[in-house]
Image (cartoon, rainbow, N blue to C red; front, side, top):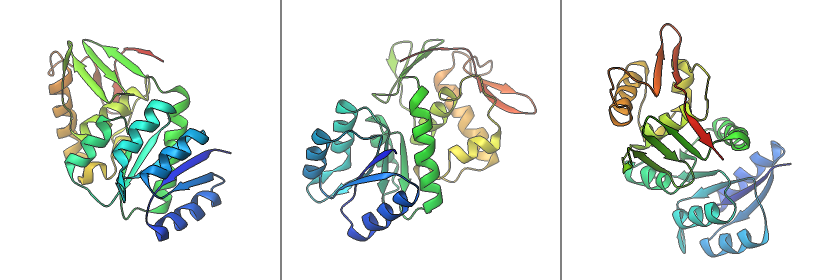
Length: 228
C-alpha cells in the first residue's frame, strides 16, 4: 500500500483529501505546518507527497526541497495560486506536478497514480544533442548554458523524456498538459508550444532531432541517453 504524505493546513481540504485517498487504498500521513512536515519526514518514509504552497509557518517550497533532499519522491503541489511565477518556482526546485485548487478528485487521483508509475523507471538525467535535463534539480541546459522554460514548456519536455520510444498523440499531450500553469491549451496552441520548446532546445528548430514529428500520428522523442 503506497504511503502519501499530505501537507495541507486547511482542515476541511485535508479531511476530504484523506478520505478520498484512503478510498483509493493509499495510506495517508498528514501534516498541517512546515515544522510538522519536517518532523514527519525524519520519522517516516513516503512514496509521494501532496504539498500546499501556503503554510502558516512557512511555505511548501521549503518542504519540497527537504523532501527531494531526503527522500527523493514525487511531489505534487496543491495551491489556489495559478500565477506563472509560483508554477515555475515549484518546478524549478524539483516538483513533479502542480495542481490548482479547486481540482477534480478523479483528476487528482489520476495524477497521483501517473506520478507513482513514472517514478519506478523515470530517468534522473537526460542528455541529447547538447541538451541536458536534470529532473531532480529542475535544471535544463543547452550546450552547458542554463535555459529557462515556462512551466508548460517544462512539463511538455518531461512528457517526452518520461515516454522514450513512444509516439505521443496530440490528445495524449493535451491530457498531460491539462491545467498546466493555469493556461488553456488546445490543438492549435499545442502546436505553438511545441514550436516554442523546439526553438529553445534544438540546434536547428526547422530540422528537430530531439522532439520529432511522426506525420499522421503525433510526436516522439529522438534517441537520447538517460541515467539513474
